[in-house]
Length: 187
Image 1 (cartoon, rainbow, N blue to C red):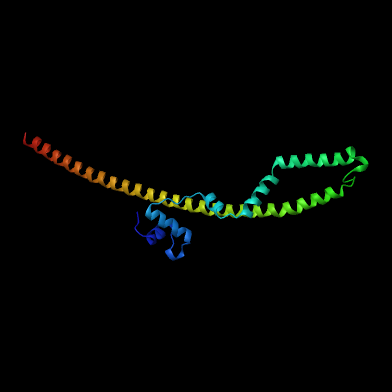
Image 2 (cartoon, rainbow, N blue to C red):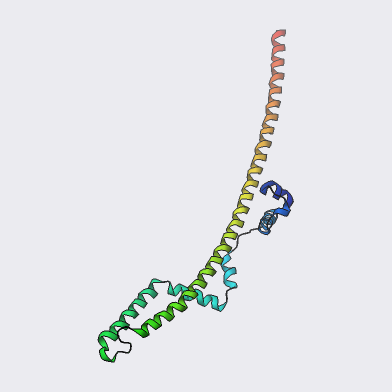
């Protein structure tokens, strides 16, 4: 394997070292040192989350679930049934359900931005995962190319060894043939 990042950059990435990104330099350094580059990006993301981030993720996870939707539908049915049939004239929130509309509007007004915040964080996580996947894939490609080169060198040296062996055997056959032809002429 090559001994410097410059050699590796020229050979595998077909670029000069000053044209490499920090990620590519890190991959080449990792290849040179034969160290692992893969890591659990979820731990890194979880370590940097604030309480608000975790709360928004939890609200988005609950608010975007079937259990929440079905529970909320049940709540709406109970609210309307209780105010229309059960409470009749002494209804807490009579028919156009103005208070219910206010509550629903407030839930929607608060839930939508929280879900959008969670989606933005998920997009950032996806970007981090994609960059890490690129890093791991690049290292894998470089390692595969290096293995191909080593196999090619090994095959080349074996072919040269076989060629030399064939030449040596051919020389011995020629000597044996010369000896046999001298014996035939002398007899």
